[in-house]
Length: 201
Image (tube, rainbow, N blue to C red; front, side):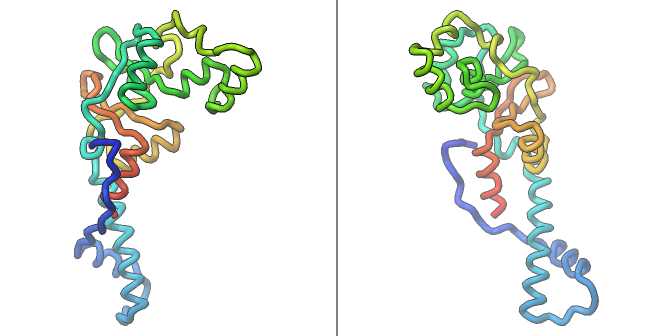
């Protein structure tokens, strides 16, 4: 899935089973009026969306191939790569090609004085206060020095609903998708997740 393209949202396909489940979920005798139909529709729609959230997998929405950086890559090369590719972070791989961490703008900013959860403006303020470029000390350092590790990863079979839960629980913006060998197969970002909800309608 190309993360730079936001898909048009379409309607959810409500199955007959969704409607029957919705009607069973309603209490008492059903006299089909517009209000009753609307209630049936809303319940069926929620059931259909839930079913599709479970059916839609990482493999359906992830961006692949994924840009990766090696654990021993220097930070100058890493920053240039991320900037050139137009991404704010990437999985970090070891010498065997397995995902061992993630490096992102947040990691760079934390090293430049923004602290954990800091902002770009905190970096600017820090830079101006100290009358110098706070990125200079990063020159002789490697990805492994600043990356977030261990990496939170998932298999391609994980559902979109489970990914959303992981994003919220772990407070992450990207999820490397790996094969059984631990090597990167793709990545799901918050934008991919938004696009996947548009696919659900």
